[in-house]
Image (tube, rainbow, N blue to C red):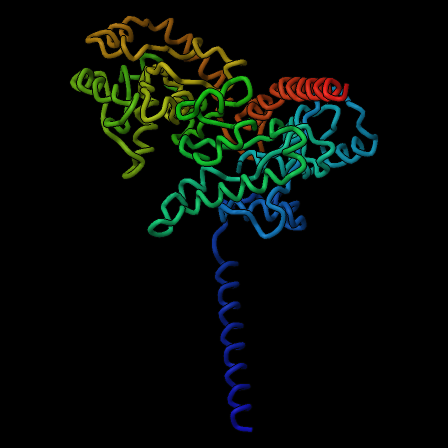
Length: 442
């Protein structure tokens, strides 16, 4: 009997140890400050009782699909018509805070967008009704793919061993296999699916196989035109990293710096122009052109510098776009865009020539050209662009809860405007397919 007693005591010891550990962990977790929770409480109220919604957040945190359904969202867009929807659908949407008839979009997409989508089912969250999440795929006009590709690239790009694929590659392969096995994908050939691939290096392996989908991108710099183009895809802004100046915006005479650039100077591809401009401008007294990074108060320094400058240089780097343009906009520093290939967010709504100056790289590197251009812009002309910057800066804010006209809502509206093209394409394919079927049957 002695061995049995020994095993029992050992078992009880392990149970006691595990219980104490869990107790200490729980206490420490309760005592931990919660100044900025990852998921707002208003959303958690809805997410926690809903297993699929909770899994979607865990999928983002782990950058992989959960064991349950990795594609929990179906989404729908309504362009001010009922489109034969049942009264039950309309009543249910109204009771949750958004009326289907007044909604432009019912949808889901990455962190800020996902938060906004989940909030569409939380009546106490005050937000625009552009987006409404639905759970019945038959009601959906658009489907969001809950794959956090930028996070996957940043965290899991290194190979797991010699001759082995990276976790990022494995996740992309899983994504392709999953989507190709879904009825929703085959029904529309993927055209009515939205995939976020905002990091220029994300989705490198999967992008060709999923190229029929609507991509949400930073630019088209590393995409062939057959895979990504303005006809079907959406350009979304980077989230700015410097603080918005808001109402505390310095005027022309209060900004002593003529032109400002701080960032990486030695870049490849189209970014080689940065080094050329550095040697042209580095010795000018009223120009700040220096190397900088996010380390050692780099972001705070950039924010202060931009807010004190009349013009901010947005120069092509490894890719045509960067967050620097949006940092300049929220600093009310007139952007000087030096790039041949840049695509801009919301350009079907915004006329960037009202608040930006565009310069060809071939002209910018001519000695004296850029300085003569900037010094020739007088206070009146600059102030007109500055006033316009103050009017449109809110379009480049990601926030929760989202507000009318911010980045979140602007993106939803961009998706809504793509829907007529998607429907036209799908209906045309159906017609051609039926015509071919009739021809073969004769």
